[in-house]
Image 1 (cartoon, rainbow, N blue to C red):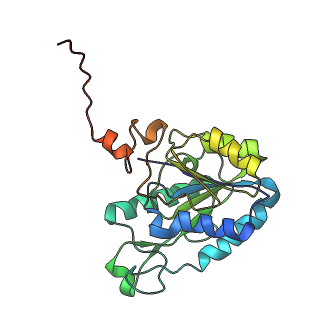
Image 2: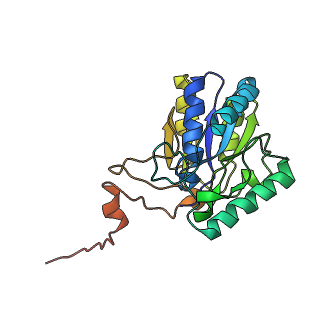
Length: 233
């Protein structure tokens, strides 16, 4: 169920909602969901404005003990994941320059009791960059610029994974182009990419799944082994 899940943000989106949805999907649960957004693919006309707004919103997130009120982001699940997060942040610095926000482990006081990492945003990530291709499973977001809706969909599909994807748009025609053209098993429209309903089938395509879906009625198939018998009596 690995993924390098994209959220496409088109110029005609509900702007404030799109910012919130990307922040939610990228950073809540510390990015530790297989359906979390790790690539925001933003159409060129609103790219700079969106990046600025998303960075401003991300800087307001509070990192700490998830059992406490007012906390948005908890710790990495263990030391190994912390090291993975910091490794990819270091790679991002090498390939993309300094992040626009975040990029550090948090230490001191209560932070010494867990593996805390700042929510981190890299902009102007290119398709060949590591952060555009490899799953981090942590609070690290790569923002990429698309020329137009068709280019955004092409970029969204340019990955070996195909678990979840989202689009932010008010154009119903663009929605159906996304639904029919996006190579992912779970699609959301004007919602975060990281969310499921347990009564519905769940699973991906390409390297994000081996075929059968789980959850809902599909779970019966997932856990079943069928036998076909032809009998004359």
